[in-house]
Amino acid sequence: FCAARRGGGLLKGCVSRPWLAAKRLGVQTSLPEGSIPIMTAGGWLQFIARRGDASRYPIAVGTAGRHCRGAAHIGDKIAWPFWQPTRNMVRREPQVYGPYAGGVQGGPDNPLGARALYLYRGSRDTLYRIHGTSQPWSIGMEGSSGCIRLFNSHIADLYARVPLGTRVYAH
Image (cartoon, rainbow, N blue to C red):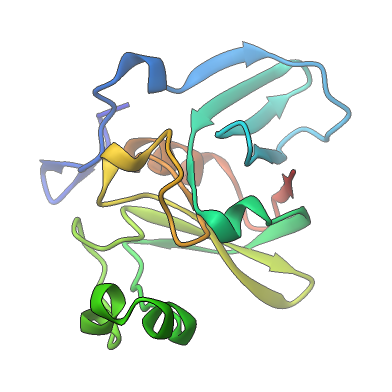
């Protein structure tokens, strides 16, 4: 999963802990092919490629993300996305997020990492994202401001496999 490249260089966040590698596995599910179930409490996201076949990716989820429940769809996909902390993030932790209140351009040091999938309900942006990270050590832990965080190499793989409109089920 470390083959994804940007500008000739390796993406930050390649898997260095084998127990956190993405896995192909057999699954029995009633969810449709091409959907993404997220098990926030278990720390995993799956992509149901076809009936009985899925890819499982380890995730990091913050407090707000653990409360993300229900169905949504991917309403936008952005490579090397711009990031800006919400006003609530800046108000809650000004020492952490204040310096970034104006935002951070896309790139290897951006908190959203290499790719971002934007979750919508109907035409409304939920403000939740499935995204990469500039902090790969956080994967497998509770360490995000609420979104679903993956290794950059994993989000690059998922980003390439899912179209806009893909259904996402968080529980």
